[in-house]
Image (tube, rainbow, N blue to C red; front, side):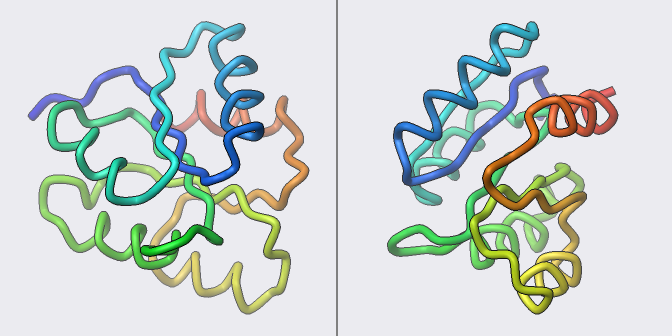
Length: 123
């Protein structure tokens, strides 16, 4: 399956999703949003995104579990994942790095640094 130029944003906070979506679209990205990991999986079954932005604290399947599943799946294992989370403990950051995420941003996110990282990973 071919990767698209889409950015998939997974976060259960709809206000945050809206803000990130607007900021990315204003900079020319095509954005798909999901409020949970199950819906994100459904999105990825039809179109693989160029980059995934993943929250950690979500009901049901949390971001760590979702990232692990993405990295274990042969079809999605190479997709770059950027964590966007309120969790700022070094142990959380190390856990995400161990799973294989490309970067970890603590909320509130510096949008220009995030855009720069997305551009780097999507190219």
